[in-house]
Image 1 (cartoon, rainbow, N blue to C red):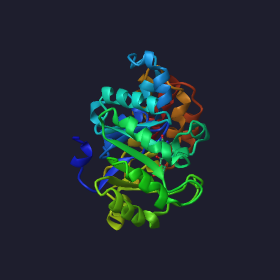
Image 2: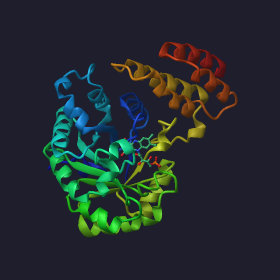
Image 3: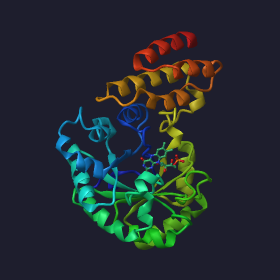
Length: 325
Ligand SMILES: Cc1cc2nc3c(=O)[nH]c(=O)nc-3n(C[C@H](O)[C@H](O)[C@H](O)COP(=O)(O)O)c2cc1C
């Protein structure tokens, strides 16, 4: 199978799926500012896509789940991340992603959210490893390369039993968030275990691309981690908050306030154009992240946080731009 993974220059640096952050508006901004080697969508429910299938053609309007899957040509290569535990819905969602032009399917087997786990999906897959193969095979019906994102274990580190189960599925790629499900994101990621993950990959599936994830703050740090560990790629997540320049060589401290505010304005504008609109309030986490790091930023942020609509925000942003000159 022809796969974009084989075309990537190693080591590669990719943007993590981040629900309610890496939405179509944010991804577009990132792709235009400094494109990672691969982009992931936020996770999308395979069951949800399946149950709303009558609306699947109404791409830009009625089906909010399909809307989460919209992307622009500048975002390739891009993976649709899905979650679910029913092979039928996984096959449906994967074929839909193929129709939409995605370059690959990524299956979430690491999310600790209770509502996802209740469906037998996300991190719960580690408790039912026998289901993993069926889910991966169902995604393969799309004809796209299939990858998985997971963690090093559920309540405790169990890489030696869990990872080989995945690696034996001949995945195109595997991303390992170097924490257990129980650890959520509360302890530092266990980068000391990355060597073992590489050994397991080399033993069970040398053809599978391997990515490590957890706490990486910059492209420079990602390069170091790749060199030290022998991983093929590094995935960066929260470091993108307020910093769509993450995949460029620019230091966040060197970005002038005006540029940060303009970027925030552009993000909010794109977000507002999505139909049907998502709640304006979802944008507020970005206000915190972008309006940061210069004298007067806290007050400016406070003013923006008080707004309740895009129009109100745009007015206040104009005033803020006058203030920073
Ligand atoms: C706000 C938020 C949303 C997330 N959404 C997803 C998701 O949709 N799918 C997924 O596999 N992981 C998700 N994660 C986990 C991240 O992809 C990543 O594994 C984790 O944040 C650790 O990487 P980092 O330290 O570089 O952020 C999310 C994390 C955060 C903080």
